[in-house]
Image 1 (cartoon, helix red, strand yellow):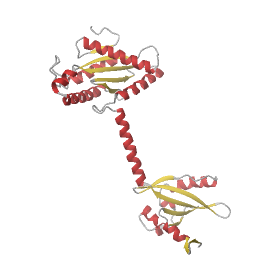
Image 2: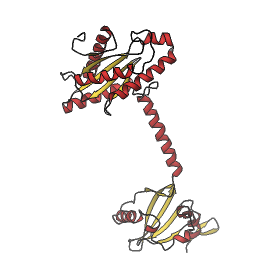
Image 3: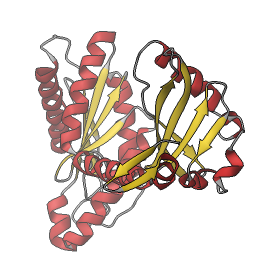
Image 4: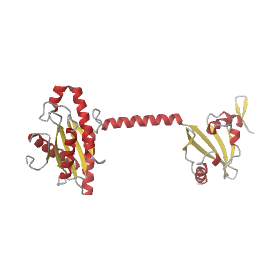
Length: 310
């Protein structure tokens, strides 16, 4: 066996092979394991000698398929791409290099397994941290429902979708009646609790998975209702109103004696002005209907474009 000179010392190739910090195996073209260094003990939780002569398919269930793919790359004169695999609870990056005979034919493969378990755990933690950060950007931190920023993006998206599919789209704007008085009387911590309970009750009242309730700002909320016309949206708004009333949160500054909401309903304008102008027009129409509901006595639903005093 050839030696490698390091200074005045001659180091045998088997010694270098054994000293490698990563698991390395030599696999014949027929799939038999011809050599394995000590680091491979971690792969099968046993001595490397136990692997010698065995078919690589007995070591890992995906090995036969991977070898066929690697052989195709090698014989095509292409670099064999790295891939990842799992042994037990550990993840490895697998690097494969062909060994050619004197005629240039692929006779075997040198396969190195680098343990990347810690790297993968770090990647998962980073990915989860990014997911949480993204969720916080789109989520209202107080109520837990989508934020105004999310509302703007989602409503623009739904308007475009409705235009493409020639479908209806409605929104409901809701406002807690005399909320400033509530905060003044009961305090801001109670006001925060009230906002959370109202948001939860109104969200549940929507009913469908595709409907979304977002916090518009302060004590105002907007529900996006894809595929829903004005009459259907008014029905959803009435469910929202009743759900909040059913909470019976004490509020001495309104006639009912408990927290109520007023709601305005609007549907997508007929004129095709473009998604951003449509969004602003839809919000404006729902806000006007909400104002009409307030003017008519609060704790009620008003529809845009209709005489809401009837």
